[in-house]
Every structure is written in C-alpha cells, then in structure tokens.
Length: 236
Image (cartoon, rainbow, N blue to C red; front, side, top):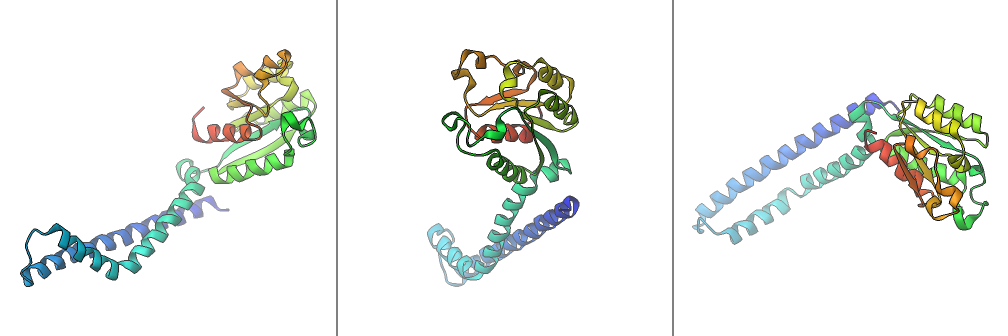
C-alpha cells in the first residue's frame, strides 16, 4: 500500500464530495427561488410554510434524487476511508507498535481455558492485526519463554511508538524486564488476559506496572485490543 497515493486519493475524494455538495446547495437555492416565483404566479400567500415545504419537498424529491444519492454514497465512502486512513493523514505514516508476549502465552487455547479462554495466540494476533489495519498501525509480534529474549525484544522495540507487553509470570519476578521498559523511550502498556488482582497473592504484585504507562487486565484477548487503541489514540 502506497500511503502517499492513498492520502492523495482520499483528498481527491473529499474535493469531489465538496463539489457535489456545492452543486446540491446551488440546486436547492434555485428551487427555493422557483418556489417563490410559483407562489407569486399562482397568487399563493407569501407566508405559507406548510405549503412551501410541500412544494420544496416535492421538487427536491423529483429533481435532486439522483444527485442526493450520489452525495450519500460519497459521504459513506468518505467515512469508511476516514476510519481506514485517519492516522496516515494526520501523522503521514503508520505508527509501529510491538506486541510482546512472555512465557506460556504460546499455550493459549489449551492452557487453563477457564482462566485464559479458548482462543489461541494465533487467534489473538489475528484480532490484533484486524484492529491495527482499522487504526492504520503497523504491528509486530514476539513471544518467548526466555527472560533474556524478552528483554532484547523490548530493547529492539525501543524506537517504536509503543509496546503492548504481556510478560506472563515474569510480571511478578523480573527486575530485568522492568529495567528494560524503563530504559527505552517507547511507552509500554502492561496487559493480562486474566484479572491478576483477583488471583493468587503472588500474582497481585507487578514489578513492571510502575514503569508502564498503564495496565489492562481481566478482559481476555480484549485486553490487547484496548491497549492497542490506547497507544493509537493517545499521546502516551
């Protein structure tokens, strides 16, 4: 996808809609004038709002129907493209956001489904990709059961616009991951599929929470999507 060409096409579409709206307005102005002439020529009361509205509505419905439909179609297209390219137009480029998962997240779907659900990691990533396309973000995915590899992934994502981090069990134990988050400029959001605050006591302490911009937990895979929206919409 060529973002610059897409932006230009989007702006051309806006111009086209503007032109059609101007034509529609001009046509309605002419109709209003015609209504005035009609009233004068037929000795109708100068002030007769109900009758005037009836005449205008009839004229608009018969004469403006095709043009109005074109404008409506263009407006719907405009809304759709606005959602797709809103960040491209504002920022002239896609935001890069890293999705980093820690130990045992590769077992999603089979690991304690009563706590973590039945969606696999691939299912979750597919949902993230779909939302990222809508938000015009570029996402990357990383998962490891090794603490040092997660530290390296955070460092490599340090120049991105954001990090969505589910550190798994390392959330409660890893000073190294905590220090990696604090060392990079990219804002990080801590996510958890389950509500860690309602689980075992040792899971209720997060070593990384105070170096993250925020924490989202307990919403299943939706936790990732909420974090992605936060990074896309807000200057964290």
